[in-house]
Image (cartoon, rainbow, N blue to C red; front, side):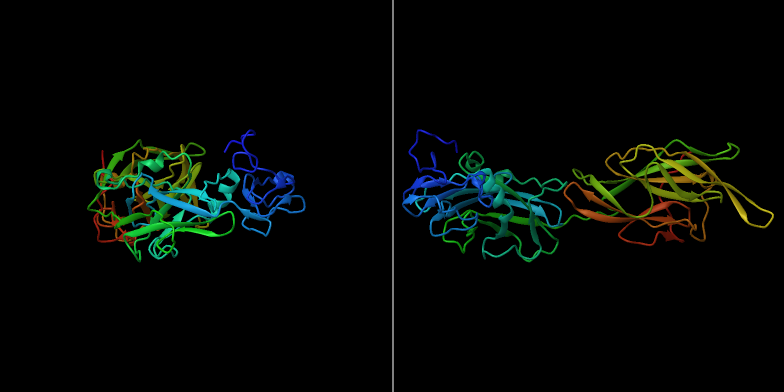
Length: 421
Protein backbone atom coordinates (compact mmCIF):
# COMPACT_ATOMS: atom_id res chain seq x y z
CA UNK A 1 0.00 0.00 0.00
CA UNK A 2 1.26 3.46 -0.88
CA UNK A 3 1.67 5.66 2.21
CA UNK A 4 -0.42 8.86 2.11
CA UNK A 5 1.06 11.57 4.32
CA UNK A 6 -2.18 13.52 4.30
CA UNK A 7 -4.18 10.57 5.68
CA UNK A 8 -4.99 10.28 9.37
CA UNK A 9 -1.87 9.21 11.35
CA UNK A 10 -2.00 5.77 12.91
CA UNK A 11 -3.88 4.15 10.00
CA UNK A 12 -2.85 1.68 7.31
CA UNK A 13 -2.63 4.58 4.84
CA UNK A 14 -0.41 6.62 7.16
CA UNK A 15 1.05 4.33 9.85
CA UNK A 16 3.12 5.62 12.72
CA UNK A 17 6.70 4.50 13.31
CA UNK A 18 8.50 3.40 16.43
CA UNK A 19 9.31 6.32 18.79
CA UNK A 20 6.03 8.09 17.88
CA UNK A 21 3.40 8.75 20.51
CA UNK A 22 0.66 6.14 20.52
CA UNK A 23 -2.96 5.68 21.41
CA UNK A 24 -4.55 2.29 21.85
CA UNK A 25 -5.50 1.00 18.41
CA UNK A 26 -2.99 3.09 16.45
CA UNK A 27 -1.38 1.34 13.49
CA UNK A 28 2.43 1.23 13.43
CA UNK A 29 4.70 -0.13 10.71
CA UNK A 30 7.79 -2.14 11.60
CA UNK A 31 11.05 -1.25 9.92
CA UNK A 32 14.22 -3.31 10.60
CA UNK A 33 16.31 -0.30 9.59
CA UNK A 34 15.56 1.14 13.03
CA UNK A 35 17.39 -1.62 14.84
CA UNK A 36 14.94 -4.52 14.77
CA UNK A 37 16.31 -7.06 12.30
CA UNK A 38 13.83 -9.73 13.44
CA UNK A 39 10.88 -7.58 12.38
CA UNK A 40 9.51 -7.92 8.86
CA UNK A 41 9.78 -4.73 6.84
CA UNK A 42 6.30 -3.33 6.25
CA UNK A 43 4.66 -5.45 8.96
CA UNK A 44 1.76 -3.71 10.70
CA UNK A 45 1.31 -3.73 14.48
CA UNK A 46 -1.43 -2.29 16.69
CA UNK A 47 -0.54 -0.38 19.84
CA UNK A 48 -2.05 -1.72 23.07
CA UNK A 49 -1.14 1.36 25.17
CA UNK A 50 -1.33 5.15 25.34
CA UNK A 51 1.87 7.15 25.45
CA UNK A 52 5.33 7.10 23.93
CA UNK A 53 6.50 4.01 22.05
CA UNK A 54 10.09 4.58 23.20
CA UNK A 55 11.15 1.73 25.45
CA UNK A 56 8.42 -0.50 24.02
CA UNK A 57 10.18 -2.55 21.32
CA UNK A 58 8.16 -4.28 18.68
CA UNK A 59 7.86 -8.04 19.18
CA UNK A 60 9.71 -10.33 16.81
CA UNK A 61 7.90 -11.45 13.68
CA UNK A 62 5.63 -14.35 14.60
CA UNK A 63 5.03 -13.09 18.15
CA UNK A 64 2.82 -10.62 20.05
CA UNK A 65 3.49 -9.02 23.44
CA UNK A 66 1.63 -6.91 25.99
CA UNK A 67 2.37 -3.65 24.17
CA UNK A 68 1.90 -4.73 20.56
CA UNK A 69 -0.35 -7.06 18.59
CA UNK A 70 0.18 -7.89 14.96
CA UNK A 71 -2.60 -6.35 12.90
CA UNK A 72 -2.98 -9.52 10.79
CA UNK A 73 -5.11 -11.82 12.94
CA UNK A 74 -7.48 -13.64 10.56
CA UNK A 75 -7.17 -14.86 6.97
CA UNK A 76 -9.54 -15.48 4.12
CA UNK A 77 -8.10 -18.27 1.95
CA UNK A 78 -9.34 -19.03 -1.55
CA UNK A 79 -8.11 -21.77 -3.89
CA UNK A 80 -8.43 -22.45 -7.60
CA UNK A 81 -6.40 -24.51 -10.05
CA UNK A 82 -4.02 -22.91 -12.51
CA UNK A 83 -6.83 -23.16 -15.08
CA UNK A 84 -9.12 -21.04 -12.90
CA UNK A 85 -11.25 -24.03 -11.90
CA UNK A 86 -12.42 -25.76 -8.74
CA UNK A 87 -11.60 -29.20 -10.17
CA UNK A 88 -8.63 -30.79 -11.91
CA UNK A 89 -6.94 -34.06 -12.77
CA UNK A 90 -3.40 -35.45 -12.87
CA UNK A 91 -1.70 -38.71 -13.77
CA UNK A 92 -0.81 -40.57 -10.58
CA UNK A 93 2.78 -41.12 -11.71
CA UNK A 94 4.57 -38.99 -9.12
CA UNK A 95 5.74 -36.48 -11.74
CA UNK A 96 2.62 -35.00 -13.32
CA UNK A 97 1.69 -31.77 -11.52
CA UNK A 98 -1.20 -29.38 -11.30
CA UNK A 99 -0.75 -25.81 -10.11
CA UNK A 100 -2.87 -24.79 -7.12
CA UNK A 101 -3.29 -21.03 -6.78
CA UNK A 102 -3.69 -19.87 -3.19
CA UNK A 103 -5.14 -16.39 -2.68
CA UNK A 104 -5.03 -14.92 0.81
CA UNK A 105 -6.62 -11.80 2.26
CA UNK A 106 -5.21 -10.68 5.61
CA UNK A 107 -7.62 -9.00 8.01
CA UNK A 108 -7.43 -7.44 11.45
CA UNK A 109 -9.85 -8.13 14.29
CA UNK A 110 -12.18 -5.44 12.96
CA UNK A 111 -12.45 -7.05 9.52
CA UNK A 112 -10.24 -4.44 7.85
CA UNK A 113 -7.87 -5.62 5.10
CA UNK A 114 -4.25 -5.61 6.24
CA UNK A 115 -1.75 -4.88 3.44
CA UNK A 116 1.03 -7.48 3.26
CA UNK A 117 4.52 -6.32 2.34
CA UNK A 118 6.89 -8.39 0.24
CA UNK A 119 8.99 -9.15 3.33
CA UNK A 120 5.92 -10.52 5.10
CA UNK A 121 4.93 -12.58 2.04
CA UNK A 122 8.46 -13.99 1.83
CA UNK A 123 8.11 -15.19 5.43
CA UNK A 124 4.67 -16.65 4.80
CA UNK A 125 5.75 -18.64 1.74
CA UNK A 126 7.79 -21.37 3.53
CA UNK A 127 4.91 -21.98 5.97
CA UNK A 128 2.36 -22.50 3.22
CA UNK A 129 1.32 -26.10 2.60
CA UNK A 130 -1.46 -28.03 0.95
CA UNK A 131 -3.56 -30.21 3.27
CA UNK A 132 -6.50 -32.58 3.25
CA UNK A 133 -9.47 -30.19 3.31
CA UNK A 134 -11.81 -32.81 4.80
CA UNK A 135 -9.69 -33.66 7.85
CA UNK A 136 -7.45 -30.60 8.20
CA UNK A 137 -4.45 -32.97 8.38
CA UNK A 138 -1.41 -33.30 6.15
CA UNK A 139 -1.91 -34.68 2.66
CA UNK A 140 -2.72 -38.41 2.76
CA UNK A 141 -0.29 -41.09 1.66
CA UNK A 142 0.69 -40.84 -1.99
CA UNK A 143 0.06 -37.10 -2.37
CA UNK A 144 2.76 -34.43 -2.20
CA UNK A 145 3.34 -30.78 -3.06
CA UNK A 146 6.19 -28.40 -3.79
CA UNK A 147 6.62 -24.76 -4.73
CA UNK A 148 8.83 -25.80 -7.68
CA UNK A 149 7.37 -26.62 -11.09
CA UNK A 150 9.10 -29.54 -12.79
CA UNK A 151 9.86 -30.03 -16.48
CA UNK A 152 6.76 -32.03 -17.41
CA UNK A 153 3.60 -30.65 -18.98
CA UNK A 154 0.41 -30.22 -17.00
CA UNK A 155 -2.59 -32.26 -18.03
CA UNK A 156 -5.23 -30.19 -19.86
CA UNK A 157 -8.60 -30.26 -18.15
CA UNK A 158 -12.04 -30.11 -19.76
CA UNK A 159 -12.97 -26.48 -19.22
CA UNK A 160 -16.61 -26.95 -20.20
CA UNK A 161 -17.20 -29.56 -17.49
CA UNK A 162 -15.81 -27.61 -14.55
CA UNK A 163 -16.85 -24.76 -12.28
CA UNK A 164 -15.01 -21.57 -13.16
CA UNK A 165 -13.73 -18.95 -10.72
CA UNK A 166 -12.38 -16.25 -12.99
CA UNK A 167 -13.04 -13.43 -10.48
CA UNK A 168 -10.08 -14.58 -8.40
CA UNK A 169 -7.71 -14.34 -11.37
CA UNK A 170 -8.48 -10.62 -11.63
CA UNK A 171 -8.25 -9.85 -7.90
CA UNK A 172 -5.94 -6.96 -7.04
CA UNK A 173 -6.36 -6.86 -3.25
CA UNK A 174 -5.31 -10.46 -2.62
CA UNK A 175 -1.88 -12.05 -2.29
CA UNK A 176 -1.25 -15.05 -4.55
CA UNK A 177 0.96 -18.10 -4.09
CA UNK A 178 1.35 -21.12 -6.38
CA UNK A 179 1.96 -24.67 -5.16
CA UNK A 180 2.26 -27.77 -7.34
CA UNK A 181 0.43 -30.96 -6.40
CA UNK A 182 1.39 -34.47 -7.54
CA UNK A 183 0.35 -38.01 -6.73
CA UNK A 184 2.11 -41.39 -6.65
CA UNK A 185 0.62 -44.51 -8.31
CA UNK A 186 -0.86 -45.72 -5.00
CA UNK A 187 -2.75 -42.85 -3.34
CA UNK A 188 -4.65 -43.57 -0.14
CA UNK A 189 -7.52 -41.31 -1.25
CA UNK A 190 -8.68 -40.27 -4.73
CA UNK A 191 -10.18 -37.93 -5.69
CA UNK A 192 -8.84 -35.59 -3.02
CA UNK A 193 -10.37 -32.36 -1.75
CA UNK A 194 -7.42 -30.03 -1.16
CA UNK A 195 -7.13 -27.16 1.31
CA UNK A 196 -4.18 -25.19 2.59
CA UNK A 197 -2.69 -23.74 5.76
CA UNK A 198 -0.14 -21.07 6.61
CA UNK A 199 1.35 -19.22 9.55
CA UNK A 200 0.30 -15.60 10.03
CA UNK A 201 2.51 -12.75 11.23
CA UNK A 202 1.38 -13.31 14.83
CA UNK A 203 2.57 -16.92 14.74
CA UNK A 204 -0.89 -18.47 14.62
CA UNK A 205 -2.07 -20.89 11.96
CA UNK A 206 -4.76 -20.12 9.40
CA UNK A 207 -6.24 -23.08 7.55
CA UNK A 208 -8.63 -23.77 4.73
CA UNK A 209 -10.40 -26.92 5.91
CA UNK A 210 -13.69 -28.19 7.29
CA UNK A 211 -12.10 -28.05 10.74
CA UNK A 212 -11.77 -24.26 10.50
CA UNK A 213 -14.70 -22.02 11.43
CA UNK A 214 -14.12 -19.54 8.60
CA UNK A 215 -15.68 -20.42 5.24
CA UNK A 216 -12.83 -21.22 2.86
CA UNK A 217 -12.76 -22.67 -0.64
CA UNK A 218 -11.12 -25.89 -1.80
CA UNK A 219 -10.29 -27.72 -5.01
CA UNK A 220 -11.02 -31.34 -5.92
CA UNK A 221 -8.27 -33.19 -7.77
CA UNK A 222 -8.93 -36.55 -9.41
CA UNK A 223 -6.28 -38.98 -10.63
CA UNK A 224 -5.74 -40.93 -13.82
CA UNK A 225 -3.74 -44.19 -13.72
CA UNK A 226 -0.16 -43.90 -14.98
CA UNK A 227 0.23 -44.57 -18.67
CA UNK A 228 2.60 -47.41 -19.51
CA UNK A 229 4.54 -47.96 -22.73
CA UNK A 230 5.50 -51.29 -24.26
CA UNK A 231 5.91 -52.82 -27.71
CA UNK A 232 2.22 -52.24 -28.55
CA UNK A 233 2.33 -48.44 -28.36
CA UNK A 234 5.90 -47.67 -29.44
CA UNK A 235 7.75 -47.97 -32.73
CA UNK A 236 11.39 -48.36 -33.80
CA UNK A 237 12.44 -46.95 -37.16
CA UNK A 238 15.99 -47.25 -38.55
CA UNK A 239 18.03 -44.77 -40.57
CA UNK A 240 21.41 -45.59 -42.12
CA UNK A 241 23.95 -42.90 -41.36
CA UNK A 242 27.30 -42.24 -42.99
CA UNK A 243 29.83 -45.00 -42.59
CA UNK A 244 32.57 -44.36 -40.06
CA UNK A 245 36.19 -45.11 -40.91
CA UNK A 246 38.60 -45.56 -38.01
CA UNK A 247 42.21 -44.78 -38.89
CA UNK A 248 45.31 -45.63 -36.88
CA UNK A 249 47.68 -42.86 -35.79
CA UNK A 250 50.23 -43.83 -38.46
CA UNK A 251 47.57 -43.94 -41.14
CA UNK A 252 48.51 -47.47 -42.13
CA UNK A 253 45.48 -49.29 -40.75
CA UNK A 254 41.85 -48.46 -41.34
CA UNK A 255 38.53 -50.17 -40.83
CA UNK A 256 35.10 -49.02 -41.90
CA UNK A 257 31.84 -49.74 -40.12
CA UNK A 258 28.23 -49.21 -41.07
CA UNK A 259 26.44 -46.86 -38.69
CA UNK A 260 22.71 -46.82 -38.02
CA UNK A 261 20.36 -45.02 -35.69
CA UNK A 262 17.06 -46.64 -34.71
CA UNK A 263 14.55 -44.25 -33.16
CA UNK A 264 12.35 -45.45 -30.33
CA UNK A 265 9.20 -43.33 -30.43
CA UNK A 266 5.76 -43.33 -28.82
CA UNK A 267 3.10 -44.34 -31.32
CA UNK A 268 0.06 -43.03 -29.42
CA UNK A 269 -1.33 -39.85 -31.04
CA UNK A 270 -0.60 -36.74 -29.02
CA UNK A 271 2.15 -38.33 -26.90
CA UNK A 272 5.88 -38.03 -27.35
CA UNK A 273 9.11 -38.63 -25.44
CA UNK A 274 9.91 -35.56 -23.36
CA UNK A 275 13.13 -36.95 -21.87
CA UNK A 276 15.02 -40.19 -21.39
CA UNK A 277 17.54 -41.51 -18.89
CA UNK A 278 20.13 -44.15 -19.69
CA UNK A 279 20.03 -46.38 -16.62
CA UNK A 280 22.51 -48.96 -17.95
CA UNK A 281 24.84 -49.01 -20.93
CA UNK A 282 27.08 -46.74 -22.97
CA UNK A 283 26.45 -43.16 -24.00
CA UNK A 284 28.32 -41.31 -26.72
CA UNK A 285 29.59 -38.31 -24.78
CA UNK A 286 32.03 -35.66 -26.00
CA UNK A 287 34.86 -35.64 -26.63
CA UNK A 288 35.77 -39.37 -26.74
CA UNK A 289 34.11 -42.74 -26.55
CA UNK A 290 36.41 -45.73 -25.99
CA UNK A 291 33.90 -48.53 -26.10
CA UNK A 292 34.45 -50.91 -28.95
CA UNK A 293 36.72 -53.82 -29.85
CA UNK A 294 36.10 -54.42 -33.54
CA UNK A 295 38.99 -56.52 -34.77
CA UNK A 296 36.88 -59.68 -34.49
CA UNK A 297 34.42 -60.38 -37.34
CA UNK A 298 30.69 -59.91 -36.76
CA UNK A 299 31.17 -57.73 -33.73
CA UNK A 300 28.29 -55.39 -33.12
CA UNK A 301 27.86 -52.52 -30.67
CA UNK A 302 25.03 -50.21 -29.64
CA UNK A 303 24.92 -47.03 -27.58
CA UNK A 304 22.76 -44.00 -26.78
CA UNK A 305 23.76 -40.54 -27.94
CA UNK A 306 24.26 -37.84 -25.33
CA UNK A 307 21.79 -35.11 -26.41
CA UNK A 308 24.21 -32.47 -25.12
CA UNK A 309 27.09 -33.70 -27.30
CA UNK A 310 27.69 -32.14 -30.71
CA UNK A 311 30.80 -34.05 -31.88
CA UNK A 312 32.00 -37.35 -30.47
CA UNK A 313 35.19 -39.12 -31.54
CA UNK A 314 35.28 -42.91 -31.40
CA UNK A 315 38.50 -44.77 -30.59
CA UNK A 316 38.55 -48.50 -31.14
CA UNK A 317 40.90 -51.36 -31.90
CA UNK A 318 41.22 -51.80 -35.67
CA UNK A 319 43.92 -54.47 -35.78
CA UNK A 320 46.25 -56.68 -33.80
CA UNK A 321 49.34 -58.83 -34.10
CA UNK A 322 51.07 -61.52 -32.10
CA UNK A 323 54.48 -60.65 -30.74
CA UNK A 324 57.42 -63.06 -30.57
CA UNK A 325 56.64 -63.73 -26.91
CA UNK A 326 53.05 -64.63 -27.88
CA UNK A 327 51.61 -61.46 -26.37
CA UNK A 328 49.19 -59.42 -28.45
CA UNK A 329 49.66 -55.84 -29.58
CA UNK A 330 46.59 -53.86 -30.58
CA UNK A 331 46.33 -51.07 -33.13
CA UNK A 332 43.93 -48.28 -32.26
CA UNK A 333 42.07 -46.14 -34.75
CA UNK A 334 39.80 -43.17 -34.41
CA UNK A 335 37.03 -41.44 -36.32
CA UNK A 336 34.05 -39.14 -35.91
CA UNK A 337 30.70 -40.70 -35.05
CA UNK A 338 27.63 -39.52 -36.94
CA UNK A 339 24.81 -37.88 -35.02
CA UNK A 340 21.38 -38.47 -36.52
CA UNK A 341 19.63 -36.05 -34.17
CA UNK A 342 16.99 -37.08 -31.64
CA UNK A 343 13.84 -36.37 -33.69
CA UNK A 344 11.46 -36.58 -30.68
CA UNK A 345 12.65 -40.07 -29.85
CA UNK A 346 15.51 -42.02 -28.33
CA UNK A 347 18.24 -42.78 -30.84
CA UNK A 348 19.70 -46.26 -30.37
CA UNK A 349 22.94 -46.10 -32.36
CA UNK A 350 24.57 -49.16 -33.90
CA UNK A 351 27.97 -49.91 -35.41
CA UNK A 352 28.26 -53.07 -37.50
CA UNK A 353 31.18 -54.60 -39.31
CA UNK A 354 30.71 -55.18 -43.02
CA UNK A 355 30.60 -58.92 -42.36
CA UNK A 356 27.56 -58.43 -40.12
CA UNK A 357 25.83 -56.20 -42.66
CA UNK A 358 26.34 -58.47 -45.65
CA UNK A 359 25.60 -61.76 -43.95
CA UNK A 360 24.04 -61.54 -40.47
CA UNK A 361 25.16 -64.76 -38.81
CA UNK A 362 23.79 -66.86 -35.98
CA UNK A 363 25.87 -66.12 -32.88
CA UNK A 364 26.21 -68.81 -30.24
CA UNK A 365 27.66 -66.75 -27.42
CA UNK A 366 27.39 -63.08 -26.49
CA UNK A 367 30.27 -60.81 -27.49
CA UNK A 368 32.59 -60.22 -24.56
CA UNK A 369 32.13 -56.44 -24.90
CA UNK A 370 28.35 -56.57 -24.82
CA UNK A 371 26.90 -54.35 -22.09
CA UNK A 372 23.38 -54.07 -20.78
CA UNK A 373 21.58 -51.13 -22.38
CA UNK A 374 18.50 -49.98 -20.52
CA UNK A 375 16.75 -46.67 -21.02
CA UNK A 376 13.78 -45.11 -19.23
CA UNK A 377 11.53 -42.94 -21.38
CA UNK A 378 9.21 -40.23 -20.08
CA UNK A 379 6.33 -38.76 -22.02
CA UNK A 380 5.41 -35.08 -21.76
CA UNK A 381 3.23 -35.77 -18.70
CA UNK A 382 5.87 -37.74 -16.77
CA UNK A 383 4.56 -41.25 -17.52
CA UNK A 384 7.62 -43.49 -17.68
CA UNK A 385 8.58 -46.98 -18.83
CA UNK A 386 11.84 -48.92 -18.92
CA UNK A 387 13.12 -50.64 -22.07
CA UNK A 388 16.02 -53.07 -22.51
CA UNK A 389 18.00 -53.28 -25.75
CA UNK A 390 18.52 -57.00 -26.41
CA UNK A 391 21.24 -58.50 -28.64
CA UNK A 392 19.84 -61.56 -30.42
CA UNK A 393 21.99 -64.56 -31.36
CA UNK A 394 19.79 -65.93 -34.13
CA UNK A 395 20.40 -63.10 -36.57
CA UNK A 396 22.81 -60.76 -34.75
CA UNK A 397 20.37 -57.85 -34.61
CA UNK A 398 18.71 -55.92 -31.81
CA UNK A 399 15.23 -55.94 -30.33
CA UNK A 400 13.48 -54.14 -27.48
CA UNK A 401 11.86 -55.58 -24.40
CA UNK A 402 9.62 -53.53 -22.13
CA UNK A 403 11.07 -53.83 -18.63
CA UNK A 404 14.36 -55.13 -17.26
CA UNK A 405 15.64 -58.13 -19.23
CA UNK A 406 19.02 -59.77 -19.98
CA UNK A 407 20.78 -58.02 -22.84
CA UNK A 408 21.61 -61.30 -24.57
CA UNK A 409 19.09 -63.74 -26.08
CA UNK A 410 20.85 -66.63 -27.86
CA UNK A 411 17.63 -67.88 -29.48
CA UNK A 412 16.07 -64.51 -30.21
CA UNK A 413 15.61 -62.79 -33.55
CA UNK A 414 16.32 -59.07 -33.71
CA UNK A 415 14.25 -56.57 -35.66
CA UNK A 416 16.56 -53.58 -36.02
CA UNK A 417 18.50 -51.87 -37.39
CA UNK A 418 16.95 -52.34 -40.80
CA UNK A 419 20.05 -53.22 -42.82
CA UNK A 420 20.64 -51.22 -45.99
CA UNK A 421 23.22 -51.99 -48.64
